[in-house]
Length: 203
Image 1 (cartoon, rainbow, N blue to C red):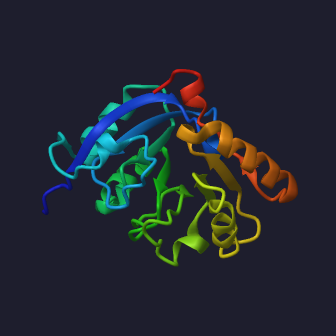
Image 2 (image 1 turned 180 degrees about the vertical axis):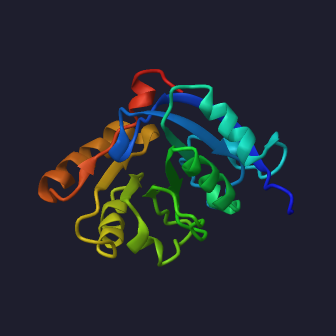
């Protein structure tokens, strides 16, 4: 029997999902260490290092989740697809959890595939082409006004019916919101995503 995969856990917490399609839903977050995208406006830079975090097996992570009423688990980072997530996703799904993956699409999706893939492509590192057809939602963070056209280019590669969100860079909130609101009104296939957990002082 092979040794179980170990996952570097930066932090874990039970809260409300603050972004995108599932905003407002109770969810247990597993934040894994390591990121090779390194967005200039990232609000979780502490998670970038790949090493130096406590290591957990999939069963140990399941034990953390199962100690709460959560039924929805979010695997995030960093860039969680740097790790072989198949064992973790399969363990959670076998225990009856709905698994959401938040990813830039820079590395292959795990098998089994999560129940929901939040695809948040970044200009800093091109996503794999397969993500455009396999994503459950598209979420693009807007840091500069030119990002709006880039976001539209990303959406044009996705299925027509995919839920699509524009989210302002929190550090340029007022300026970015002005661009986004005007853009969404002119392009109503987009929706606004805000980081509600920040407003509610949640993890």
